[in-house]
Length: 482
Image (cartoon, rainbow, N blue to C red; front, side, top):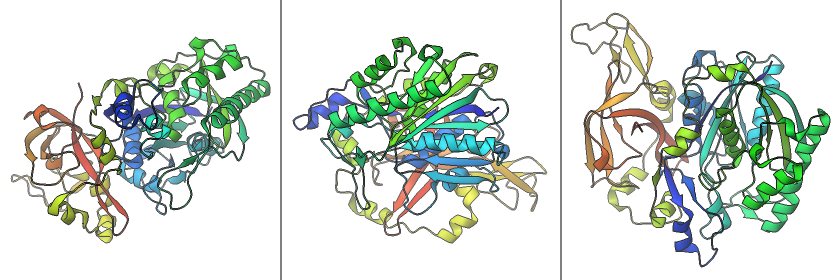
């Protein structure tokens, strides 16, 4: 049996109400879509969100047993550097694994899911972790600015302890130009909305799902949930009616609370469906982009053994409204502002690539050391134990701090240093189980911090080395959302 063993998701904490966008740009393109959308913070991108979703998926599993990682996105920070390798390193997976990037199309997430299932079914790996994530840029005043949200999903595909087994699939491929982005384009191009709706989403998803039903002699009423993306609310409902499904069978697309998250969207909807699934349920999943893929899963009793996940529900509930459109555009790189001399110095940050390679586990995976003699954890990794009562030399073993919670020992709000969201906040964290280090603090306001409050680690973009085209990543502290 091959299928989904575990799931996870990440939704950025920041949300912007579409009325905020419309009040600033509505004279160009009045919004017809209600609600809000998720907005990645200035230090989040498709890679950091994928790491967060992957951590959620693997929260109670042994990472040493993961045999592969596939990553799907249309917004990789690199044109030539495998993002799956960055994510695998940040998750502290062993190097003897298979990695691959899937890109260039919004159905890349579904394609990666099918490939992961094929890999496991063929016996090439016992399991594959799939992460899908997008932070798509949109030009101010466009429909995309109103529709697109940011987020990530992660699925562990395996051949044992399967919570939702893959029972079949049906695939369609069409060279259909709805959205496209050529080499050198910052923003995507699109054709007319009515053409995309009527000739694309409605026809392709309906055709793929109908093909799957015929192939396996199924009825649409057999499914507890039917999952498919469509950024147009009326047309999303119309697809369900065309298929003859009841409204209760259609998975809510989260357009008014999340937005369309590209390669991750159908998989995030699948995670939401799995959160409410019961043993025996059948779930139908369809993607969109260059055609459509339709898959159907059978939920097993293993779903009831799933540990706590942040998933979709908890992530949706944990939010803060971004009330400034100007701040939103600055975070998206659309607004050029004066940053001051200190920012100019930081923008010239040099990345020592050789050192990054040698210390990759310490930097990207936040792995320190633990003394074998006295059990003291320490970061950065040391050869000599920092415990004054021990002092052991070369008696260390790796110790991962990224999945440890901590408490804020000290903190500072720095109004002199440049920050996209001032003040720059940093402080010292005492980890549960011992260990101490100082970190930038993000996803919070200075006034909300208190000494002793619980924090957790979050993989973020620390800086952008523009002259060399390098995104520098490290870990930051985030207050635990209660």
